[in-house]
Amino acid sequence: MAEPDDKIIIKKIIAGEINALQELINRYKYQGFNLAYRICRNRENAEEILQDVFINIYSNLDKYNFTGKFSTWFYRIVYNQSISYIRKKKKVNFSLNEFEDILEPIDEEKTIEEILVNSETIKYLDQAMNELSPDESAILHLYYFEEKKVSFIAEITGFTETTVKTRLFRTRKKLYSILKRLLKKEFSDFYG
Image 1 (cartoon, helix red, strand yellow):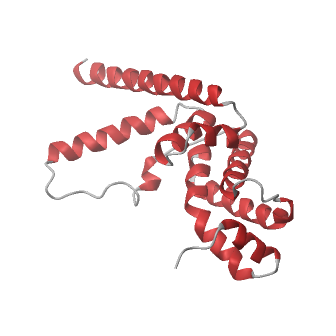
Image 2 (cartoon, helix red, strand yellow):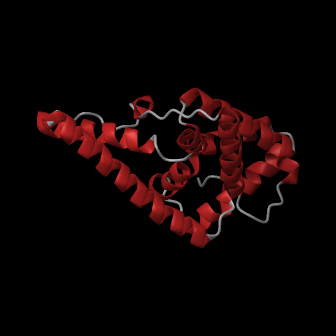
């Protein structure tokens, strides 16, 4: 049996069916959490943001106009609330260690060298991502991890498609530059 369309679920929620709300939450909680986490870089804060997002959505479902996709409206709310949260906090910490359960499990067939190279890559990526702005991190996350189209990212961030493409290009270059600097420093410290 096919899953009901978001709009059908929303109409059920508006009609007072509380189970439909849980269905909507289950459908979007992982994507919402991942985006909030990419922006605020803290598991507890991302969970708090997502909880606020679902309360906000439930309180304002009567304002949803049914002309656009619910997912776009949802992502835009998560994005805006996460950015607002960051502006209030001003301190951002990012750690891939909080996502250990999502990272690839160790394959016993891999050599020690392969495992060390993989963990070193994560270490440097972690450090480099920490130097990106929340906007840069969010755009990279949406494009590469959520596999969202540029038009979708533009719609939820409020940027033009050209701006999103430009930011993706510049952020990739910035990430490469940061990684290059980190590796150069590590190399000189090691062989120094």
